[in-house]
Length: 186
Length: 186
DNA sequence: GAGATAAGATAGGCAAATCTATCCAATGGA
DNA sequence: TCCATTGGATAGATTTGCCTATCTTATCTC
Image 1 (cartoon, each protein chain N blue to C red):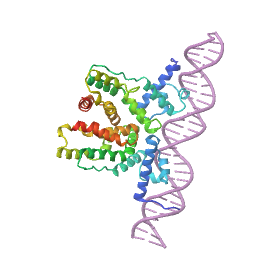
Image 2 (cartoon, rainbow over the protein chains, first blue to last red):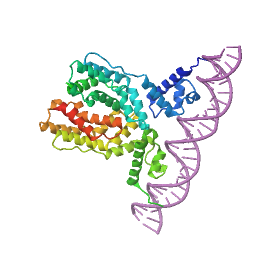
Image 3 (tube, helix red, strand yellow):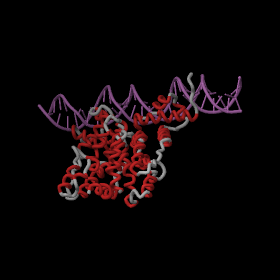
């Protein structure tokens, strides 16, 4: 019989399968059987690791969270920096947000803050680096940068993703930057 | 035995119970049995009206939608009009939005547009009346009013509600209007 | 008041999904 | 090479929720 996965490799395959099921059918259609089948294994293998359905869902989400770090661009221009970051988020975080949203809908135990941090990126606010550089270049005045303004383009993109449950078209990203964000900061 | 509800009164009680179940546990945890129990009735009563679970969920949502019409304020000032509308939405639509979000998360068959239209209000865009009057008063220039700018304060509030799953504090509403929206239109 | 209508109780069939028990087989380390 | 470990197959017990059939009883209408 074919090769047999073990340990970390197997665990990764299981979590990947779970994640695919989650994005394919959403939380409501998520079943252990489907994960087992997609991973090409059998129920006990799953239950040896995660005691129940919800534990598996949580594990799958955190698994994807861990390896989806957004890197902050440095193009030399505030407009391009923000736009590039928006494009990256747009391309990589849609499934994550919708899956999280479905999960949070079922469980409100996870706080809304998790959802908020999700698109933002990681630590404090990685986008801060972008704004700091723009101020250093003299591109914008620091007193125009409230916390809300700084998060504005990302909030608007997150809103777009949450409402449409799909990536935003590129011209929407540009519109957000050129007609909303930049006029407010310079 | 106790009094027995009939017709419209009973139907309202059933839809209310369904709505409460939906907001309490989300779409994933929504069961017919729970609705039956909460309404203090029995399964056939439910099934005589709605053929299945999804029909009941849809009915409960439209039921709540119908009786939560937001009226558009007319205070004589753009700032107060927008702020008043935001406050009304904030106070009345939180459960609606989160429940809809939960529902749509389970089923992506319903389009994201439904969720988007939800907070806006009804017909075209009722907030348009506010902007028309502001232009008539000469308070703002019509060419500053793109569709995105017009929906901006409402998008930001919706974002706030979706992420925190709670009403926004009043100073957040004011911040949105005074530091984001108004600077863009005048 | 009598009959039609619909509410409500009870029970259960059915399907799907969760989780477990039991076994066999492959892999890796000693 | 041997053995402990763990992956994988299969089957099934159990639960849970959807929905229906049947009957009794309250309420409305005439």
